[in-house]
Image 1 (cartoon, rainbow, N blue to C red):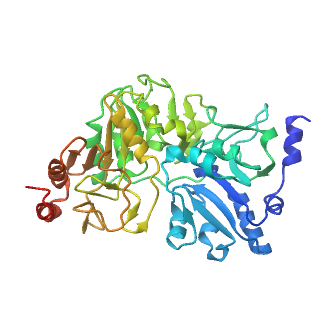
Image 2: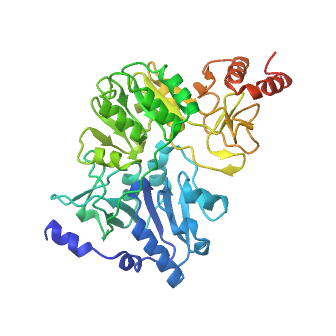
Length: 434
């Protein structure tokens, strides 16, 4: 049987595939646009119709409005289990209708191999090539691990998915069922850069030398930093998430990856999500490597590039330098993701720097994000021992290796002026400032 015949033999409708699902099944999906919209919709519909129970779906960084997170009537029938939490997962976790697995992103493949088995792994892929292979398109973070622990592999073929050359590939012989579902990929709306994010971006850019290797997150401050880096030369990219600002830096010539110590002349990432411009850039492009997260986010790999620069966000930080990026008090927002991976990788790099950057206030200036103590119940994401540079629109504090008193004085200096007296009073009352 040739590859085309194998393809036709395995091609089914989403409804027919869902008809094979049984109560108690555990599904796995990777992050972002490689999640399977049609298959999951059909599974949820089948579960409602035939009253299936105890189905679990493991996800990360959800980009579709999955019913198993949004529809309360599915609670107990199909429930999500998030490895990060965003969008619908965040609301479902807060409502007690979904579960969450705390983790460092780099550890996901090992945790999956050590602790989990899947009845089916589902992945959206690009069309099959002449050799019988499907590219896993925009994501390779922990797909290989889930594939190794799955009894079945279901793919959703979408001609809009880019064909990534340097990432995990699935052969037709490995696939149990194929659903065709052609639709444009989800995109992130453009981020509007305000004066504060531009100020912070410029402050960070001043600290980044030509030839540095960068990791940027998502949001206004990373985008503003990217725009401020357009005048730099010979930058490299080794990042968790490949973003629009990175495409901009590549196309303007600021990034050429020529000074990287590992994978020179290649952009390295573990997943991509953003605009159609990103997906077009990835397609058939040998200059971008989408690799498993246990390699890309390993601090011992990250630090091999000199002058590694990491930029991440925070919800709040206390005077010890403890960074909360996952909750507002006890209210769950997201997971650790790769923040700690890159904080540690950058600080271990020769000449490297890690930046935690955020606007100094929240809720229209009524709340300081620099606090005497974290909000009760706040989750510590990056420890006081790991944090390096902290940036607001009022300047930069360098905490790594500094005393508690020095940390407090520096953080108070970059807090919003309206809160500096209050923070100083609290620090003196606690004996932090002498």
